[in-house]
Amino acid sequence: MTMITPAGIPPGWYADPWDATRWRWWDGATWTPHAGRSTPRGTPPGWYADPSGEAPQRWWDGRGWTAFTGPPPPERPWFPPRGVTDEQVGVRGGGLALGGFVTAEVLGAGIAIALLVAGLSSQSVVVLLLSQFGLWAGLFGACVLAARRYGNGSLRQLGLAGIRRQDVGVGVLAAFIGRIATVVLVAPFIPLLPTKTVRGSSLTNGLTSSTLTAVVLALIVAVGAPFFEELFFRGLVQSAITRRWGARVAVFAQAACFAAAHYQVGMGLAETFITFLTIGALGIYLGVLRWRYQRLGPGMVAHATFNLVAVLLVFAVR
Image (cartoon, rainbow, N blue to C red; front, side, top):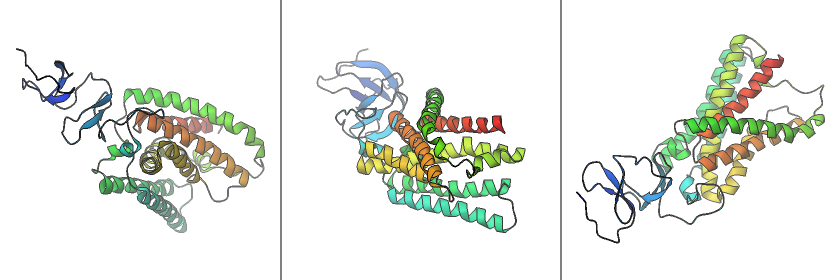
């Protein structure tokens, strides 16, 4: 049986004329085998007629329909996927991001101070966990509020989705490239550090204390931090800045915010400079991954691997 379709209908997804499935791809001349009830597998990434009918076009990333809708904009030479505008990638929520960061810092520090006043050690597992949960609650809460207030309530708008096999390979490779690059970048400035007055970092101190504390801190650094920091800085902050000022500004601006967030009271000038240089460079790198792949998976894997390498190095020399 052959279904005759009037000439002149543009290529797109339309209701299957045979009712064998929900959607079928019309290539402009004939019906094709590409069909499905929700996601047309085997179709290359690109702009297609929105199967939901909510917009003229919707971006198909090769695996599923995304939240990017609208008429196909002109291609541009910044980061792929070409044809996705800053407005479609970005979400509103800059004020919520600022408020969430302040709330996170207050909650994290407030909980830690309260527990220390109560007599717990600064290296206690309880102090580490509860203060970190307070910090993460502020960051995560800002993301949820932004998604609900300015979007459809889903954190997929911020790039959060399941980790794919491709994300693991890309992330691990990116982490080792980033680790080598940051070492090369920072090495010339190491002599600036006053060796007798360098403070032991919380990572070093925690990993060299009790076994339980070391395990908990390693999980915080290699699992929790990559998830919540990527969701907040590369998800919410970068998206909000992208929408307002564009992708170029957003990649560098979120990296500056990311570096500033790692400042610790008591750092000397040289230590502050090296920390900002290292974390800022890493933030730019992770921001590029976020824009290149239009999701947080590769950056989360890269961030986790990057931190895990640092943890293993501390264990190796303890």
